[in-house]
Length: 213
Ligand code: PCA
Image (cartoon, helix red, strand yellow):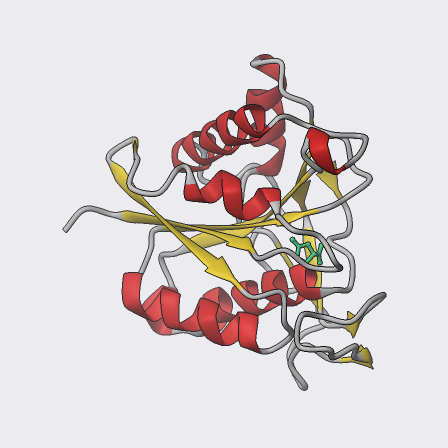
């Protein structure tokens, strides 16, 4: 069975009609990257339900690599997220109308997890190809951070996922959504390069993969 790469994107939220994260990962579905097959799936922009969907996908596919992708309006670069925190603090309602304030993603879990992606190597690989990329120190406190934290907790605690690596990338708006923006084909090219790099470089930081407690 070929190794799989799971890429997730979100549905539109906050009154928007599209979400570039889903459009980008969808266009990579079925592609081969360094001998791995990409599986793309959509997560709902909803607390809890998003993680239920992600957990079912992890069980079904047992991927070698997972990259969850979300939209971050206002950012101008592909944002390689360093840290997921155990906090929900929603600045707007999710797509089910819920707006949790200062609740844990998972009661009793560590305060934070670091990414298991080689974010510095990925930034260098993207910039070498002329794609704007940055290391980000916060994935926010809305559904993206919620999913990122749930992913890292699953990778840290589930035996069946002990060889799976993963993390989170935020992408800018598309030109039709506002500025700053990045065209869809550039986002797609960037995600493909980022995945390639993650498959080639195991880890680039002594912090990678640990809980922060
Ligand atoms: N971005 C939101 C949630 C879904 C998405 O694409 C976020 O940054 O939390």
